[in-house]
Image (cartoon, rainbow, N blue to C red):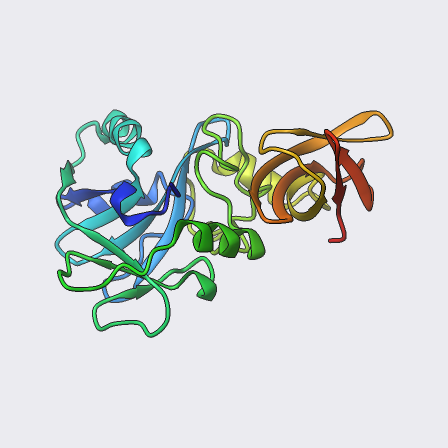
Length: 253
């Protein structure tokens, strides 16, 4: 079951006069203006490591956070830790999530990560969920979309290595947020030494298998759909043909 499945999402509702200022100091992307659709973003540890990713929707009187259900409780706890005396109220909402592809219905919002990921809508009964777990997995592998629990690992992943700049998930002009200094330093490196890549697999292997080349560890296989997969690689060790158990791993990008 994919983590982006509508039934596996939770909505955190944030109200109070300080809600936008509060989020601005925590999220990797700027809070969207009212009427400007969804923003994809993350919250990081002080060491700059991924903790949670989610969508933000600013409705004027509140801001909704659309987050994986497994991340909802730890995200609420993290937000509460930073709230201090700010005029901010946090609550888990029963607002429903719909996800679809094709023509975007009235009241729905384009997925800000990639046009291929369709649209999302909130609290709109009657909208069909054209969700297909295998189709979703194939699409996100084709478009290099990381997912919580597969490629995005709390307290381990760095968002720039997982493509957040390409996915419109980080704003380098928005000012300070928790973990910003580490992220900015990685941005200004000449190039990243590690990161997410799409590979082709020949033979049988499993998600989580170590990738090797010339007897040295190069990375790890993550999500697999057919003969395509997402892999986390050390680019300085990557070769056109590598191994993952008994399978060959072909890297061309």
